[in-house]
Length: 88
Image (cartoon, rainbow, N blue to C red):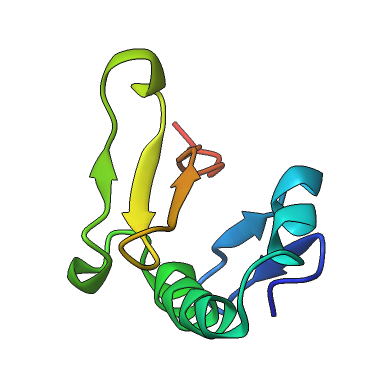
């Protein structure tokens, strides 16, 4: 699930992985990758699922959001919103 360039769900949520993210995955322990897969499946359905405890960062990272994978690992992401076209 997490090793492609992006992942698209039935709800049209698209997740794109940076080359740096994909490279970092290779260095993670299997237990962290398994936990990551579970959390990303929740994230793909609803990025603000209460189980993820998604929160907006502050300071220099204020344009980003984050959720934890474990106590030592977290995901930082940009919420680009929707790309819907509205008709007047």
